[in-house]
Length: 386
Image 1 (cartoon, rainbow, N blue to C red):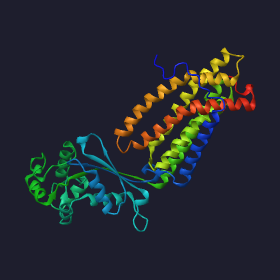
Image 2 (cartoon, rainbow, N blue to C red; image 1 turned 135 degrees about the horizontal axis):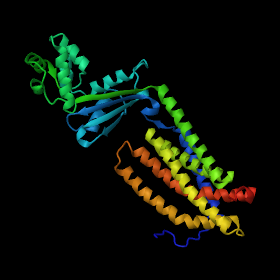
Image 3 (cartoon, one colour; image 1 turned 180 degrees about the vertical axis):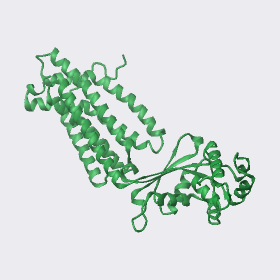
Image 4 (tube, rainbow, N blue to C red; image 1 turned 90 degrees about the vertical axis):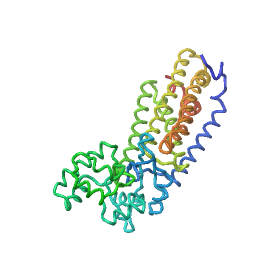
């Protein structure tokens, strides 16, 4: 079997453990400072705002779209390519603090309108101002209303155009297609050919998240993490028959989650639902690694009843060290690849997982086990012997 350390015999649970405790304390202080002073860069799920999904006829240039939106006064918005590359779809997010007008009364619909206007070309704006209708942007109701003042069979024509557009990936390539649409009369085709235009993008969806919903989601996230940690505390307590084992394992995993969250705040990466998923994954990974170490300690306590508790813990940590390092290394290789090639949206989640897995590996060996030894020295063997 592959081994990183063969017959490891490091004196990790003796005087050197205080260096690890000091490093953990320093990391927690840095995380506390980052969260208290810099705060989290909440995404639209928590901060509230507007999300506009668009489909383009040609591959969109993200930096060009961002420049157009900045010129419209929408600030540093988040733009993400979604779907397959040939789908040509983007998701544009405008956060709540930017989603207001000068009076502070902006709403999702108003912001989406500003986004769409900002991305139109001068020719498209001119066509709209002259009364022409954009067949790629118009809904069935809007198209029917526009046709209703010009044609007797507006409903049937509008239905036919929208059905054809849906069947062709939601976009018309040019007004010349109108004449070949089943259900469009020659009179309607002539009218639309001269009085309509086809824009370079179509609106897929608009979602608005209010600040109240964002706050409720944030509270739910805090409760979710708290209940997860509490459940793990109860599980470890019953599994090892001593409450001290549960307490030390929970301290270790809370240490990992808090530092990972602190690094998100320190780097200013977006705190979104994917980061919440990463934090919950860290909880699961950290406790899994800790239980492997604790299981070996419990086995050795039964095998070597006359040995010193500190000696048994040190031997158990050395015995599981190779397994712990190999497991963590394989996970980190995948996470680094995800960080490098996963795109802008997955970057915060990947970064959070890398920090969490790194500290989860470290805490299982140098925090949870070390705290057991400290508890033994402080309270005696009856509180820690499983």
